[in-house]
Length: 289
Ligand SMILES: Nc1nc2c(ncn2[C@@H]2O[C@H](COP(=O)(O)OP(=O)(O)O)[C@@H](O)[C@H]2O)c(=O)[nH]1
Ligand SMILES: [Mg+2]
View (cartoon, rainbow, N blue to C red):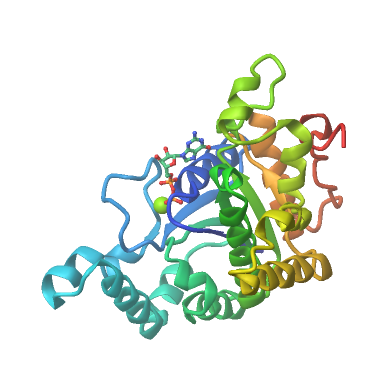
């Protein structure tokens, strides 16, 4: 059986860093994992692991920009369309891996997660090749600093989930930047968070984070925003599809928890005893509610 994890999320969320840590972890557990790079804009020296498949062998953003005169954004869209027209190249590249675990580092263009057909096309091909696929969607903990930014992150995760229809895990990355340690309360305050209870409201998005400011926003000059916020609150309340696993790469248990959820989601090693995912370290983030 072959497995593929699509590592997705906006630019800078920590996808490449997570992919590297993931592979290091697989290696340490004597599992065969490979990196696949699908980011045409990745810097040439940016990988600790040499990708076994690299979109830049087919088309690189640099060439598209210099040869076709595209800007960076148009150039990226060109690269994805080029890959979509050359999926046989990818299928051939994917052909050689048996019983392997592919970690697919995806680009961060937000269009890819909202409406571009690139990722759904990729998923169809992976399915056709019999590769069991799931997605990890990362947003970074700085999103929690601003509740509006945070909810736009939640909505982008939701839209990507609905777009792809594959097993899905949302991750709040860079949790090392959020301190909820009572011995160091300044970290939390600096991030605009008030302790663990508040962090839990972000990991399991509490629509009241948006609604609680209703008083402030009931500004007669923009009643439409108020209505929009209410509609978003309602949407998240009615469809609680999104919750986040915290990822702190400075804590090996945290990475292991995320990976065991990935394994479980894909029923990795289905012939073995089914494994329950590691319990979240409840004491860390969800306690004291
Ligand atoms: N503090 C902290 N920084 C991180 C973490 N993961 C990634 N970064 C930094 O965030 C930036 C973007 O990371 P990268 O993996 O390239 O993001 P990508 O664009 O999603 O692939 C880099 O400067 C990383 O060093 C993390 O867990 N903690
Ligand atoms: Mg990257």
